[in-house]
Structures are given as structure tokens and as C-alpha cells.
Length: 474
Ligand code: ADP
Image (cartoon, helix red, strand yellow):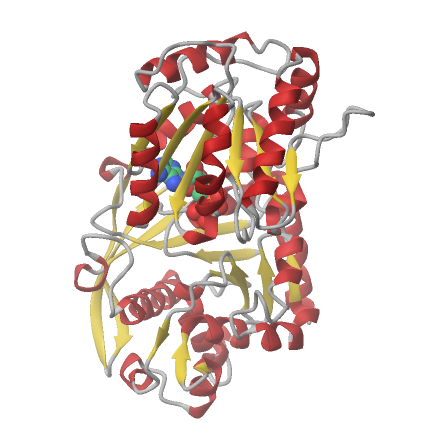
């Protein structure tokens, strides 16, 4: 199958969250199992690895506002699959990747450029795989083009929901300007008196997927559906949950070049070295008997930081360490700073984004906290499993699908899981984990259960191929 994956961010070019990990890894995994897959993503000011790409097309003409707008396209294979980077500084160069009132316009342009590129490459694609609201425009446009343009006639679209909370809303009056003048197109975008790029994608795509089975069910309820649950229920026969894979070439403690010592389930001694180095790096007193809780996250309400906030006293009183890496909402950033000031010998905080440090925390921590309010899939709990870092999570979305609560009686399970969004439940699970940690034999059994889990892309990519087949058959 010929598959174009379109995404607003992809590792190793750009990343603000899990979407980038998925978009970077999926085309590579699809190719490995015999598909002609390629990736289209924007070239931002923030895109890294300038030496990795070269100019491929310097005169891509994009149908845009009644004229042909020129863009450039760069080419790279740095993620293991052919990648086309759309270069249009007027729309894509900003101080940050997202967060502007005209984001709908920026990504509508990116979508139109991606479609112009596919056409320019000359060969129709079977599947266009679109991701999150930034790609909703392409879903609507392809559905429309298919009526009269033979190039798109046999192309089918799959739209993946990585996070339903971000909807790409804008005024319906803008649709004309963006090139969506027909009633057919406008109806797809129409949502509660405005236009929503996410709704466009959910409504116009041939097939829908989301990044875990459990999240696929959750978003069909009015509590978690952001006003779109009715649409998801109506299209539930086309909505499939496929848990994200982990790129084990990047996240593997046996080969990871970013950590001070490599280790494996057979010999965990390197993990202790990683822990020592991590404590030193944060200028914390090195007491290797005390456990380290790790946190790596965007600091938003979604991630349940307030549960950590309201159970922090219990954590500190237990004598454990907490090492947190993240950036985002100021209130959570200052909570972490304050906690560090209150317990400088136990807490390490890095406010910002730091890829290398994220590997070092995964390797050096004993436990990983992820008490999310909601979590479409979540990657860090899966990285933690592979690094022998026992996840403590709330049983929602992908966290519920991938973490199995430890059962002392029969030795099964790979982490600790609680249900209610309540700090006392988190504290209880932390205590349970500390109790298990105190017995090295029990602890290593949990670690090894986690390290043995296979959340590789091989299995996830196979499920996507199956989904593409079904899409083409419908
Ligand atoms: P989300 O996409 O909602 O942010 P995921 O768990 O799916 O959550 O993916 C988050 C990804 O971003 C992980 O790869 C994680 O390691 C990374 N990440 C988040 N915050 C930071 C940070 N401050 N520094 C480095 N990596 C981060």
C-alpha cells in the first residue's frame, strides 16, 4: 500500500509531545512490513537537524486563496522513512510551534501544501493517514476532491485522534478564506456555531482511530467527548483503538547512548549507576537505598499534577526523592519550584524541555508518576516499563491498557494503578509501591515483568495495516 502520513510534528524533526513520537515511528514501521509509506510534516524554525535534509522541490505551487502560492519542500530520511518537510516561512516560522490565533490558517495552509505535494509526486496514494486537528482540513478537502478529481478517487483517509481536547476552533466566516467554500465542506467543519478542524477530520474521514482501546470508549461518553461524543458514537463502527508503539531503537536501556550506564533485565546493576548519576546531577545527597520518583511531562491539568501537589507531603515524609522534568502552566511550575525549596535534599526540578534528561530520568528513577486526569495513550509509562522504572498511574485511557496492577500473591503485574481522581488514592499507591520497594526480590520481579512487556511498533503497525485494508474495502 502507498501511504502518506501527515502530521504537524514528528521525531526527530520537531516535537512537543507524544504525537511526534508516533508520527516519527509509524512510517518507518509501516515500511519495515512492506508498505510504501512516507511522512509529510512542516519545517519550523524549531525543526532540528539541518544537516539531515536537502532541498527537493523549490517551486511547489499550492492552491491557496484563489492563487498559486509558492512553497519549498525539503527531503530527509532521518527517521528511517522518506520525509517531506514543507517550507513556508510566512505560515510555519514562529517563536513556538503552536499557540497563535491564526493557527487554523497556518495548518490549513500546511494541509493544502501536503496535498499539492502528493499530487506533484505523481502517484496516487491508497491511504492518507491524518493526525489530530491540524490535519482535519486535508480530510475534508480529499472528501471533496474525490467527487470530481480522478487523482484522488481511490484515496481513502484515516484520521487518528491523539488528543480530543485540542479542537482547532475558529470562526465559520474564515472557511471561505481558507478555500472551503462549498456547503459540503462547511457542513463537515460546522460545530456549535463555529468551525472545528477536529470535527472536520472526524466527520469527513473514511476511518477513525485513536491511540488506545480504552480512550476509544471514553471519548464516546458525554463526560469525555468535548461535545463530539455524539459524532463518535454515530461513527463508532469506524472507530478503532490502536495502542501506540514504542520505538525501542530510541528507548532501550541496553543501547541508550544518553544514559551513563546501560543495563538489561538479566543485569540491572547499570540502573543503580544511572540512579547515582541522576542524584548527583541534581546535587542531591546520594542515598541509593531511598527510592526516586520520576516525573516527565507537559505541566497541564491533563497530567494530574494537582494530585502530585496534594500528595507531595506524604512523598516527602516517606524520605523518598522526587525528580521532575517539565514545562507548561505557571502554577504547576511554581508548585515544583516551591517543593524543591521546601525539601532541597529530596527534590530535583528542571523546568524546560530536555530530551536527553528525559532518558536519564527514565533510567535513574525507581518509580514513575503519571496520575493523569485523562490520557489518550501515554508513552512515558511504556518507556518506564522498558527501563525497569515502575509506573504508578491512574487507570484511564492508554495507562489502563498498558499498566497492570501488581499482585503480590501471584507475582503478576508491572506497576501500580488507582482509579479515582483523588490525591489520597495516589498516596495509597505510592505507599504500596514503597512497601514493595523495601523487598528487593519483590521489586525486581515487578521490574522484570515490566521490562518483558512488548509494546513495540511491529505489532501496532500491523494493526494499522489491517485498519487501512478495512478502509480500502469499505
Ligand atoms: P503527551 O503527548 O500528552 O504530552 P505522551 O506521554 O503521549 O504525552 O508523550 C509525551 C512525550 O513527550 C514523551 O516522549 C515524553 O518523554 C516527552 N516529554 C514531555 N515533556 C518533556 C520535557 N519537558 N522534556 C523532554 N521530554 C518531554
